Image 1 (tube, rainbow over the protein chains, first blue to last red):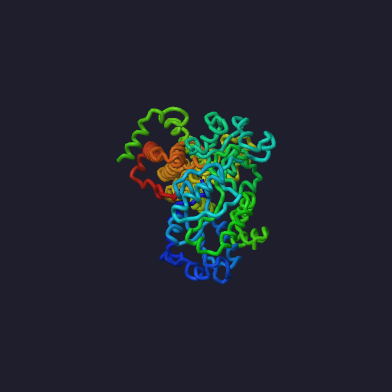
Image 2: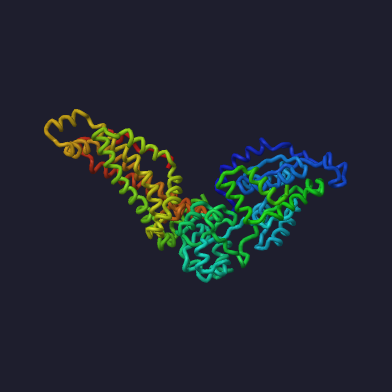
Length: 321
Length: 244
């Protein structure tokens, strides 16, 4: 469900890269414990701030969030070592569990399901809570989550939304059979796709006119824009939504797992770090909305702007640095 | 072995032999997806190859243009065509056929290069002495082409068509990425739904269809080539294994 366009290649290459470019590969270096531990009064002396090793997954949105968190921490006096684009979760989870990185931005639902074997729900608070419990057992902590969510969403053109007065998925249910749907080939057997449409919204999947197109990809976005399909399953922060002025229909029955973003940090690290470590990151998370993240995605992925510049501009705009 | 048993079970399950996603329908769709573009490609490529081979004019341009076409990955052509053509197709009322038309254009781009190249090479490679003799007995240029050059070049021309046909039948599988029917559906849907036995069965069916195409064309070659030419090199440019 996440951006998995080049998973295999990226995974293999970047698995090699992290071995080479992650500092302190021995896994023993625990910044902060040596120096900051002494002057234990948290945040007392600003010279004592530890080095934070931040990782990210291979796709741009994960890199962008990592860069935003990194710059906010640097602004607060921390030294940051970046290991961006490590790979997929198959590589990033071992990296943080082994202590090769200290933190990584994560999607709460996908992490809970994919990384920790839990069951996310459509409720962000609940999923976040479940995730914190599951992560604690692995020696990991989850800080506050963003309002922004990158989840699978059903999307229509503005004109379709206007014509049928659509704002929610329940609105869509009434006209479902009049529209052509772009749905991924696995939809039929996916409880979050056909299952959600049928059970939560009463949309008769078998009666829909469907074009089989992979979700969250360029072809399906083009198909929606040109009118080959009227409804498409995209990712909620996909740049095409902003580019083509699509309308994301609200999942009013909360069928999709919550996919807010939150920093996943080694508990050992966050306990040793000064108090403002979590404060800085939480302040950043609180400001990041789905609309912002989509817009930044257009700048990074479509306009090919430098991730560091885009991150800095957003942080300044929000008064965070 | 367990996996092969699952594949076998897939093939023997009657459900997979009937209905709109049954094997007969998918094979039929696959043949349409392959042979409509192949016919269109032949209609475009053969005149170009015949003209350039017969006259020697514009040969460099035609061959190089065809080879550039070979260098672009078919998946790339497919996605570019999808992005560029969707709106015009919708405007033309071809909304439902958009996937098939787009895939057809990608297949066209795949089929034209070997057809142009082989036709040109076949015609241009005909012994000049024979062509001069034909002219000498008073044959008009078109008569030379029809009566001398084309029959002599036919093994090579057909080899080009065979190459194109085998490649297109194998590659039409990709159309499923933009939502066509055909055997690619088994492969793409099988991967998406983690039904690997279905994916594997689809890949096997594509291979079998490509092999059948190869056999059909070699039969056609044997039937149509003048007995006097048997034993002549079948292909100057044989079935090349492009990167699909």
